[in-house]
Amino acid sequence: MAAIQAQGPQRLLEVGPGAGAITRYLMELDGVEFKAIEVDQEKVEYLLNHFPALKDKLMMQDFLEAAPPFDQPFMLAGNFPYNISSQILFRVLEWKNQITCVVGMFQKEVAQRVAAPCGSKTYGILSVLVQAFFDVTYLFDVHEQCFQPPPKVKSGVIRLLPAKNIPAMQSEARFILLVKTSFNQRRKMLRNAVKGLFDEAFLQDPIFSKRAEQLSVADFAALTFQMK
Image (cartoon, rainbow, N blue to C red; front, top):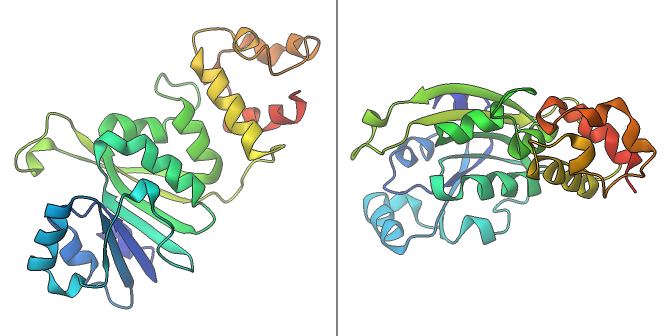
């Protein structure tokens, strides 16, 4: 809650409130226009029965198919469903021009992957794409004993803030294509993984002797200007 309050949100969307573990606190934040989105009908009924104030603030809808719930910039928060963690982050990227902050709990491995630095074993597609547009901070672990019943996995909370310096790129579409192509064969030398995206002569540049995890976000962005 402290990480959320520190951002002073004016509008806040909670994704997947479930049984309302944090909803009860979020909806009481002063001066905040609050909304929540939940796809499970039983959980929606439970929430409305236990938190009548949620009427007109709770949407029964799939977050991955929903339109932005506010006309103005808003913050996103939640204990995000682990089975769609990556899809949620890709949705955040689609909405990046409207999102002022994300504070969310993910499966620990996913949270670590998003925050992973260049060169680490967990640095991958999600790391690069998210870090291109957001400044990522790994806030803290959440032990499985904090839940009833305890899950079989550990959790981690991360914060995303719009990046202060988004690297120049030829286009977002090319950037995404390059990153995904590079990491789809991450064990290969980059030259072999992306040979279809660049002219043969340019592939002789020393940077292509590296593997994908050795390239920074800025490196990937710069290479988009040389793609076919």
